[in-house]
Length: 135
Image (cartoon, rainbow, N blue to C red):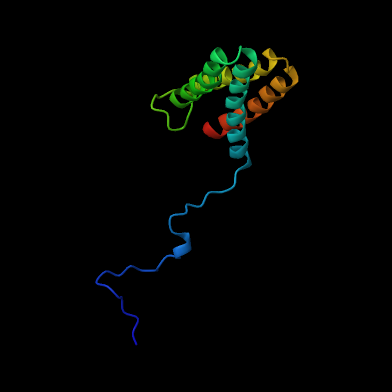
């Protein structure tokens, strides 16, 4: 028996079916840290809304509104898929403002150590990301 193609089109090598649709991404600890920093930042804003304002009405608005506002600002000015072109300085200003806001939330509700640790970890993560982007 010959090794002839089974269709009019020669497809070449047949890919492994278990690998189809699964892009290979390398594990990057800094990317995981960035995701954690963003998540903790949004949760910090929601926590601030809960503890800093009288419950239920103003607290619920701030618990939902502050993280949504921060996420929108991040998406429009800082995200890799941002619809608004921003230079490196603008992206840095937006990121610093969001990090200080999330850290300031903890400081304002009486947990200054948590706020300062968050700011330091976010700053290290931001510097590493900045260095990756400017290569």
